[in-house]
Length: 313
Image (tube, rainbow, N blue to C red; front, side, top):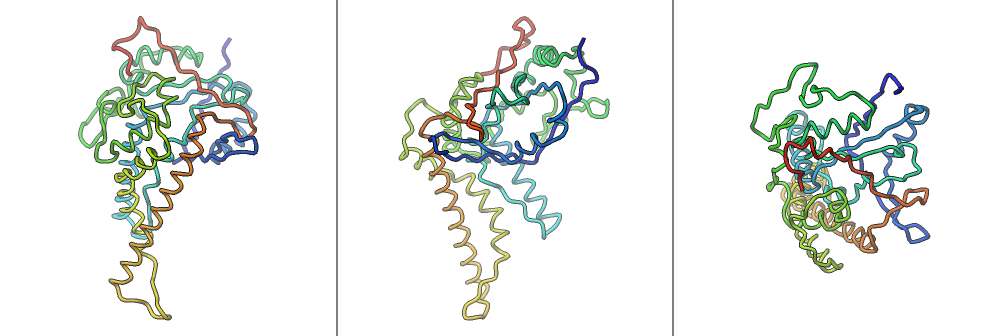
């Protein structure tokens, strides 16, 4: 008999930032403080039976939506409280380093786990949630294919990118105002193993080799992410007071210095991107901080007879 009741635990961190370094054995190690926080949770440490599933969305689409969200949050904070500074981070680099879909098979949190694609849930809800319910050992119900809040259906209101539930509109958005082709190419190339594993077709990466020179050219084309970073980071640098000889300089000079400081700051991000590229160019092979090789989380398999639309690629 299945264990009851089922407990769903979702630590919805605002942002999980991964970092990588090369260890003494020349292995690329992935680490994230938020991941370690999950492991320290008493619920995770002492709960006997654990099943894990994680969502995935096409990386370039997810990236564009994330930049849009961060920028809107930053503008809303400006309008609400001038003391609060919300910035757009280096979302491109964070995207290619976020390999939360790779797992250590010996990690008890992921011994029984599957990955669920957003596009499958949107386009084929019955097939997706039938398979997910079976994995979780829960009964499938029609309510799983209805987006609701507080027991009431959430309608699609349209406009401003609002597409809740099973409306497929967001699947096909390109978010051109928030991501450009150089950034998309870079993301697809450095996540190419995940694209191939999880059935996403390349839309920007052309299959060519990317050496350090090509990667540097792509980084020079990160004009969109840099624009949003500068537009939000300038608020931080504008708080800096500039003095010469103990006296504060005039406003025009102070603004020039603040902008130069900002430009220098963005240049450091370019250097950091290049350093990460050098590590990743050694190969997309990763280990946990305990030295265990990481592998792709298995993808939820759908019953072909339940498909309402062709599988998304």
